[in-house]
Image (cartoon, rainbow, N blue to C red):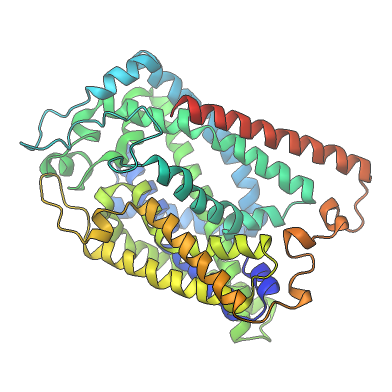
Length: 477
């Protein structure tokens, strides 16, 4: 993606900035979270030491990433996906059978109150809107305005510009294969609602004293963290509901999921550093040197990520999803604005894009620093955070940051000379040549008719996916 941005806008500074930003986001929102989640799962399921579990995960993952490269990562991902889906379906069926079905889940979740609570507070009470996706824009923990617009901006950043995803699309045989891969991923992306979120709610309903604890001493007993134990919902369900044989399968499933994610990040991060940063510093570097540097980068990223885990444990009430989204909402929207305007607006140029990114970075980094300096208060304590944190939800902030960054890009582009023709041709939606749209690589034996047929199949599935998602969105609203 940084390479595309360089071709579209020209110059080197935007490409270098995006590569560095991607590496930072990999450390603070991907590698550290995956390591923490994997170690927590092993700690809960097997009782092993937290940091011993982290080291074991790292050794296994790093070995086949460094030895096998992208091909090994993609093949193991494909196999592990099958194992993950089968294991998750088995657990979901057992969980719903245990609680008595979907209707009973709604009743049981509303009554999932821990036995020990903090007096004169309501943080132990499950939210009244827990079974609804559309929540109040002012008082909701995930307001519908933020979820609809803010998460869309961050999803565009991840699914369209993140190196982990882009690298897979670029490895496809042709454009139809890339489209089909994205559509298959979209079908799989519909599964977490039933296979992850609802089993997590069942876990809270079945084990409120552990998963829903609010008293620090109780949380310390349940999961080793004083600020909350919602992260142990899934492993707790595995350990309590699954028989011994299937329990082993689920541990393998979770480790496969986390290692699959880690290998992808390691591979894409080393590619970013060697191609976009090291080659700029040493233009004459040979393949052997680039390979060695890429492997050393993985080791450095791992070290920084492990050091960051204690900070992660104490952030955002200990909830990994909220931590990840709040960090992303402060850094990703300017990149989304530059990317979208670069594709759909031919007048966007390098000066506008660069200053849009810089203004967005300054504002986003300011909020991010404030979040770490002023974390959310524990249950029962008054909220003394600055207004930008207490009154502006992080998803609403993402929308505002996207709009502001986009406005700076537009203003900067209009006040400076337009981009050259070479920066437009085949690089925007409106100037893409027809032969590029066909997407066949040179020497491809497939006929244009066959390409057209599979393009229609992909298009039909894309429309079907949109309809199904809109239906579920409305059903759970």
